[in-house]
Length: 241
Image (cartoon, rainbow, N blue to C red; front, side, top):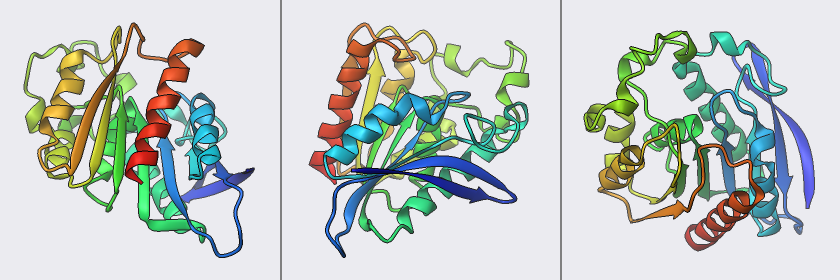
């Protein structure tokens, strides 16, 4: 396996990424996965899963959204819409790699990255999708930097319903591929009703599953939770790609 630093253009800026390349013979193409990290996080948080996937034979890309990690940009200026541009740029970068089997591309998104992965499934023919503790945002927040909003405006998570009318849920309803929802049982940020809504709304999926990591908080810092996440991710993509 080789790890290659890569630069992904988005407009006039560039995102820093790492491409994990399995051992390969000439002219071989691989099932491929791109990973989207959470809001304000970085690719470092997912390098363990990227390596595990590459060891299983997946060409895997993990990168920093603009304003995060080693990428260009100012996080305090990154709107939700810009995150979608970044996600699309990362997907295109991987898909256009000569080692990528374009008919077998998957996306893993965590939290903010899960929300962007859900939306991206409406733009691209993603064969397999993992939404890990996926976030959800009001449509009217699209051009807003979420961190600048008052606590009173950030009310979607506290709602008992109303998720079905958001663009991420409307997109998931139409997703025809294979989808895994990963819930963190003790998630202090994403309520259970959000992961339930994503699962429930995957009405067109070829197959769908929902798995819970017991006792896990939103951010998986503890190794015992990371081990479970890696197992779920590698087994799902091995089965569906």
